[in-house]
Length: 141
Length: 87
Image (tube, rainbow over all chains, first blue to last red; front, side):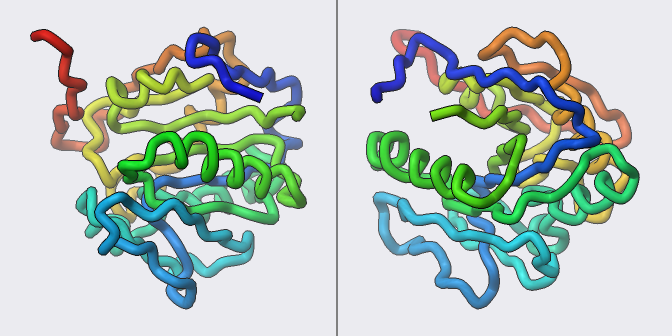
């Protein structure tokens, strides 16, 4: 399937937030400290992504990304990957739950077509398979 | 393919607009690397994420980026601009 650049691929939302499960997909280069870091040495960018589990301790996360200043994220990962914020919203009943999978990738690439047609679809499929997400929140750096 | 509703939080609204995201929030004046606010500002982070999620239930125009101001963020930053061809 080709996605028209003229059309916005809008999926309606017809649920209540308080009964919905939320996933985070971030381009901010977030990954677990024990996962392989993104390859910042490749000038074309790293097309890979990392799966982040729902029960992650936010202190076990880190950022590998050389195209934005991530010192604030190093101090509090929630400024780009709001997993603890989601937990607060769940505790307050604002959202129903936290998805079983979240994704970090490095949103810098000189390989736009491969990112758009490859990585982006792989991430969408990853979320579609077993994350049980009703909604995805996207963040950049 | 059924699709999953998304909402984007962006601090580079001009750059993001080029991709025409279905729903997007620009917290005005937040710098790159501070999509949800500054470190430790949990109340602000909650407000930003809540506002972004609330866009799902609002009748937003697909491709439009909604700007919201958060004075508690403090010092404001100019977002990156998209270079106009020919200008």
